[in-house]
Length: 212
Image (cartoon, rainbow, N blue to C red; front, side, top):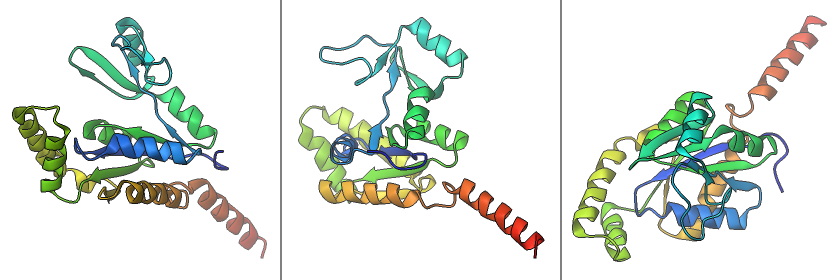
């Protein structure tokens, strides 16, 4: 079930360990008017990954052709592989009335906000730095050196949080899901999203007052 009218593009970023992936998964499982954006990549599929679900898998040549044709909202190259957000998929879903959620790094979020100022930017964070450290340590999958680098990266990212529209504290996963959902619902009534309605009202008022 989608909304009447065009959907909203919501960008969600957060520190490593902020629980972004879990929040996105729970949101889209609970609400069927939300769609997760699917990225394209030039890397080979890993076991269990599905085309069009995990990623849109492209050859390096196909990806570079898409770059030349300006088919990405944003893209970047990490460790020799391209990753990007295809415009077609996102805009098609939005035209169908779905609110599209894109989980992305800070740099990509800023690029999209610059190109599409009506995008909604949400930053997720644990309640404090000690909790963030505890979550990274608690994973048990990373060395102390990697955790230290992630914390240093978080310190740099924190300087840019003010460029986001909303900050959501992920202290309880279910509460966090509802807060993000509420922000997206409210954005449907923002002046940035309702420009068509505003223009129509101005036109109608001018026509009416011209006849008085």
